[in-house]
Length: 269
Image (cartoon, rainbow, N blue to C red; front, side, top):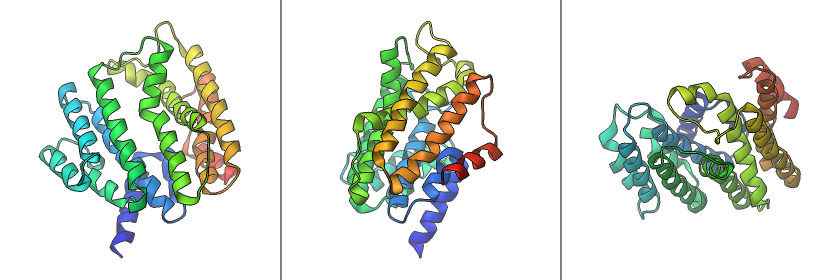
């Protein structure tokens, strides 16, 4: 019974933190649902540290590297609790409960999920230290890999862990990278207001839209390779929303309405 409450609590947090991923995660079968929910919430926890409005960059680096070390340690849960305990009242709830999200993961999936949490934490720390400086398309590729491309890789490993589903890792990276590029387009004004510019030098929306669509086209191929099963059921929802958002942005819009989201979800489920 306690495990059921943990899952319900995790889904409640997912609903608060991601309109895009709550729906496909909530539809996953038991076992796979816990693995993907754990991974998403852990990554959301460290993302909130990276994006925190009042933390100094030095503190962000220290915390992110601390998460990296904790998730590579022999006692992930205890080390994570010790790391975050002094920051009650400063970090958001999703970050402070990182140990709970880690515990949600099925034990046999821990090696995959924990390895990627450690990798992402370290690379996020490196981007904070570098001031998120993006000058070239190669820099943009590096950033979108660090925060999303490796999520695609992790999901591919989770699909294989769950039922042996095989997928192309390079296409998996493009799947994550394309979704992140949509976020960069959608959050352009807010990012500039906080002094962060994810566009390479000389780029405007035209170039970023081209970059995004190129990756989403590869993501379409990734889904075709999946053929069927829970992996495909999961991936087609955020990809459908990403394509629709790009089309909206290209004509001057920004964010899909809740009704539009539900229509799009219903069209692929």
